[in-house]
Image 1 (spheres, rainbow, N blue to C red):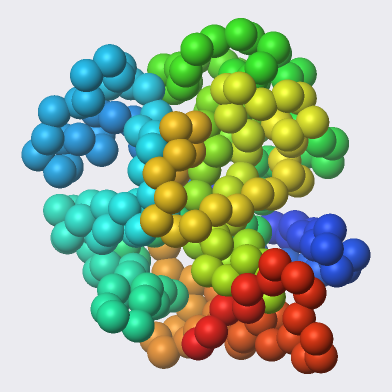
Image 2: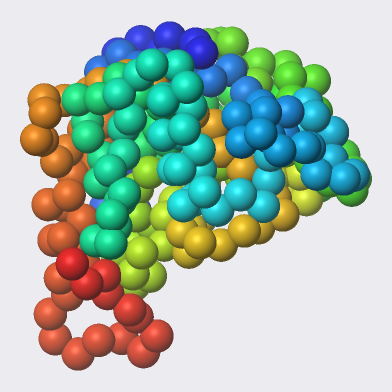
Amino acid sequence: MVPVPVGTVVLRDARTRTEREVQLLPFRIAATPVTWGLYSHLLGTAVPNGEEADAPAQSVSWTDAVSWCNALSAETGLAPAYEVDEAGVHWDVSADGFRLPTQAEWEHACRAGSTGPRYGALEAIAWSDGDAVAGAQPVGRKQPNAFGLFDMLGNVWEWCWDYSDPARYADYRVLRGGGYADKHWSVRASVRRGSMPGAQLDDVGFRVAQGPVGEAGAHAGQGWSQQADEDRAAIGGPRPVGWTPLRS
């Protein structure tokens, strides 16, 4: 786990053509995505056939990642960050356990003080389409960013805590970073995609963050707000074709 200092990040929303500045508290984030070796060891299972222990765990859903974070917290004696029940997943922002980063935390950690589309030359820092590899590669083989974080771009997309767009895509969650088969325009610090929380995709993994970022009972932290989610999902007037607003 690597400490990330206070900072500011500007998040842009392409659909609404808006942007907002987020002030971030210090937190910690893993130097690499969670590997198959670590993922399997915690669950007491074997590394899947054909996978390398030091490659990112992939085809892991957002829901699986949340459960794994809670299991790691329990294993290490930390307070679980998530409460999971029939109503969904709730983040206790005061907990010191392991969790998924918010997308604001992820982007701040990825940029590490840089302001361009990437924190270095694409071929030096990220596995992408240009490398012509057949799958995810062992972590830490490309150059890290200024915070000492590897594979923030390329290799596998990484789940974040936030909803992607609760007005249009219901409970889809954010993916950041790009993957080993993506073109250069997708492997940038600002690019965001989303998918269903139960989806298991062969170029999607996750990286853990850790640290309390608010008071007990609060429903906001590090650029995320439950109220903002509800406000974004509450669209008035005729619903555009194909839109599925999140229902609370």
